[in-house]
Length: 150
Image 1 (tube, rainbow, N blue to C red):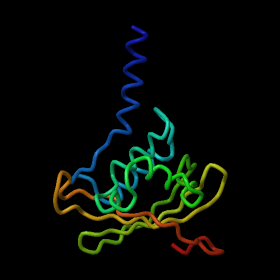
Image 2: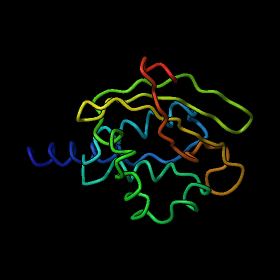
Image 3: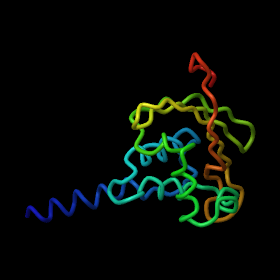
Image 4: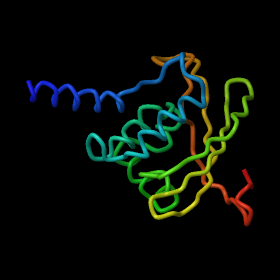
């Protein structure tokens, strides 16, 4: 019985990182799904958070970044490091313009570094994920001395 409970727990934990794009999610919900996974990047397995982020990378994003191994290398660069295993986040209001959305956010990385990012998404118009919001890009932005530049 104990092993069944443990297997059930481990399986449920894995499901948290197996979300796929869906027309049911708003741009802000997509960003929250990805950031939640990235906050626990190595749970339930190594780079599970980055894998979840890749699931929500738009076709245009994947064309620019290439396959998963290259996407992972980009995310692990110093510029994006505060996103992985961050300790807190503040997601700003989404700005919608047609089928695109921009969402500012501030994270506190695991080392205490405060970093700002602009998340850009688009609603897909064709293919497997038609009408789903997916990430086109994430850009680090300076916060300025008051940390209110976003």
